[in-house]
Length: 424
Image (spheres, rainbow, N blue to C red):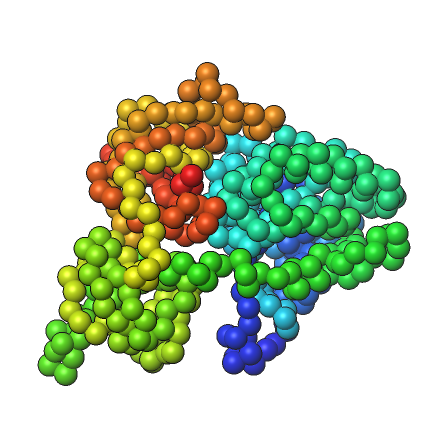
């Protein structure tokens, strides 16, 4: 295992990325290869998967076993749940969300990709771009994932042929012209053999670009966060009720966007009261600035009636206060979405009830066209709907701010999350 000093490790930049692709395109093997070649596996883990691989009669070590944690997955050889993996190199810390390839688990990709800086979409070079490639790329575009890496996998099965790689890249460029993704990279790899994953491949001298690991380590992600619009949804009000902290009133939560500093003039929504930030505390220590996605406690220089679900913002930079609006919805439930149906809506730390006023259109995932005639929204469908809430929400368009532009819908009777939406 690689080792780092505690101070250096804590200061390292964190990158979140998700993997996607059709079934058997090699997502779990790729993640296993990243962990294996970057020396992130304990010896006993390696011995266990070597033993299992031998028992199954494989000539190679099945690195996908490192990732497929569920017993059902190991037996079927597929990924069902979203599996999160953590690893680090001397340059960065990483959180990987390994999401399912089967069409019936598309909703899991939405869960795994919601906070990602980058999406790795695997394409089997022999099959080329298929329906799930388009589906996953569209979801990445919808979720405004800033960076997309197309890993053209299994190059070893086509003798590392450059023309086969170019063919797949050309196919995908046709699809990507309809998507809202600015930064796209193409890497020819063999997850099984390790070509261009961590180490440069001797079999593809025609490829002059970076390896996958180099891309992940050096991709510019610091500008992915919104550091302009200051948004602090209050999660909890801290009142110690102790004599030594008799007048203490702190507001705890996670900063959604922007940079806050002591002395800043702020406004509290919905009451519109203004104040100055007296202090910002992190783990009991006062700090001079706080930014997304830090979880902090803020105190103000005057007492204001603030509770969970309120939002602290800058005086001259406020979000929209909305009650009737449209969202792009990814439906996640076995029961169909009901026009006129009532659901609980959760936005940052605020919760209200909402009514589905209209289903405007459904997205045809194969053509990316709008279908305004089909209003039957079933599991894994993506649609634009209009809703009305019982309380105002303090929101930004999702394109501008992923944290304050997203909502989830919850079934009132079962308390299940039934949909994830992006405010248009």
